[in-house]
Structure formats: C-alpha cells, structure tokens
Length: 286
Image (tube, rainbow, N blue to C red):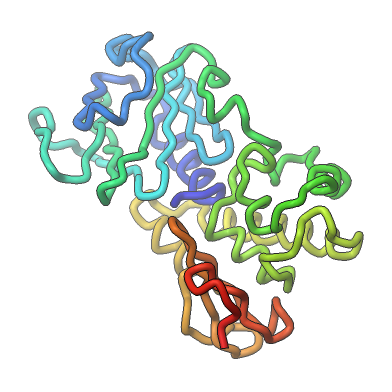
C-alpha cells in the first residue's frame, strides 16, 4: 500500500508534470472506483491543474476549484504516460481502473491489482467532503506536530502501539509497512500498549517516527512514479523481510499474521529475544 512517503513523492511528481496542463477527459474503466457523482467527471473537462496536495494517504489534485481526490488503497497505483494510447480504454479483467487524459496527449492511469477493489476516486468542491479526509488525524511530518502533541494523542490509548500508529484518525499517513519500520528503529515491541509508554519510550518513538518518514520521503524525492514501489521496498529493513537477517543485529526477522495483514519484527532488537504470539496459533511460538 502506498503510504505517506510514496504519496508525498507522487504529489511532487504530479506537481511538476501537471504544471500548465488541462484535463481533456476522465475515463472510468471500473465503475466501482468512482465514489461520487455530483459534480460529474465531465465537470473536470477543460479545467487547468492549479495545485497538488496530500492528505494522509489521499492525493488531491486541485482543478481550478474542483478537487480530484484519490486513495490508492492496498493494491492501487498511478502510472504516468508521456503518450496515452489512442482510443478509449476497454473495460475488462485487467488492472486499469481509470484514465486521466490531458489536452497535450499525456496523462496517467489509476490501476489496481488483485480482486479486492478498494481504490477510490472522488470529485468534490472541498476535500473535507471526502469522509476519509474529514476524519484524519494530524500529519506526523507537520511542523506543529511536536513531541508533546504526539504524547497527548497516545496518553489514553489502550491499544497496542502497532495498531495505534496505523489508525488514520489518530495519525495520518502511516500504514502497515512504515509502522513496522518505525517500531524497529525505536527498538520497541509492536505489542506494547500505547498508553503505558514511559516518557523515554515516547521520546524514542517520536524520534523514530520522524526520522523514518523523513528519510523515506527524501529517498523518494525525484523518483519517477513507476519506480516508487521498488524504491519503497529497497528502503525497508524489516517489513516484508520475514526469514531474512536483521540489518542491525543479524537475528532472523519474524512475522505475525492476522486475518488481513501481517507484521514483521526483530526479536533481538524489539522483544528481548522472545517471539511474539501469532494469532493463527494462539500460543507463543517456540
């Protein structure tokens, strides 16, 4: 899933490539992708791009007062085309969900792999009309989101810190991958209860969050849209690396699987050498 650093990089990429461009047509291929109907997609035709913004994991293209907002979900992506194919796209079983054609022949496709179709597109007058944006928590890289604000958010949390970091209504933009990375940098178990963290642990976690996300954004800057996925994967130290050696201590990276996701961690760095309980087995792994 694209998270804060990748969406921030897409924002920069599109901000550069869409300058002085106008919409020719927006062509939905998978009708399920469109979550709003008023204003219609046709209202975007002929409008110039006037800005690109990120709200958590949402990408917001400002078209002279109308906003084309998309959330790429778990398996979605944006594919830039310096020259779009001739003719309209054909509906089918492929990954193409929606095409945006510019007046100069360029454009981009929104695609989604797999069978769980969650990619979403909204056309609104105000981004706050999008329910997912309206309930977002603060951005972890915002200038005003300091350590005191972070500590205040977690003070009453009774959830495990892994789940708290992923909650978009608490903190916007962190998903499964970067929550694993942040906790590894902080040398903290994903099962720790957020509201029971000590002042020192909160300081360490806050610094790990800012450093991990800032470094990921810096790595992604200037990277073409088509290469951002591989860039993200190459920079991950524990997420998606089950069975590999931890780059810090050399221990084997382990995994806990849930019904719709999994987490990866290093026992030596994060849990005192003890494997975590895997819910698939409901017992401590030996």
